[in-house]
Length: 161
Image 1 (cartoon, rainbow, N blue to C red):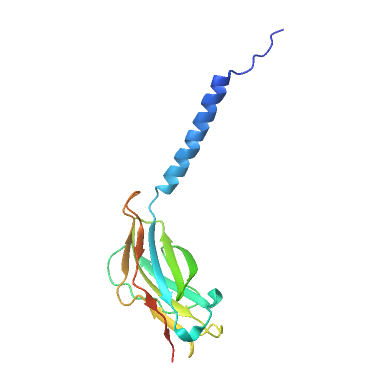
Image 2 (image 1 turned 120 degrees about the horizontal axis):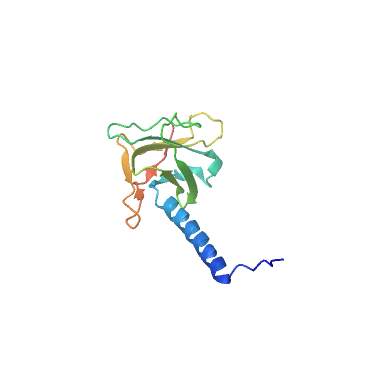
């Protein structure tokens, strides 16, 4: 009868090293995929008091082609998009910081913020609306060590009269 020999420790070590190396490589490849980010500060009017994140609605228009890209109208649902983005909203001193993340090397973006003061789902008196304006911003991923964040000028949300 032949007894089974245990696997040498050096083989187990090689297999563990290879598995760790593959895991590291897969994380590195995912982190190297293009990511263009846009950050905008949405400044609320002083009349808003303490901001409620649930009342802030952000819509955006995005395109990989240069050209006119008007700010989208304010709304609860974003307009139909060919380009999807991850949207993060965080409270800021004067309103909210909004960051859009696109899995693209470069993208033209325009956005609109709407603060629905009374929470009725309609743009009406007392609400606040603002956008980047008539021209989009170009967000680019400049490479692994060069950054990928484009910061826009602050957007003042103005009261709807």
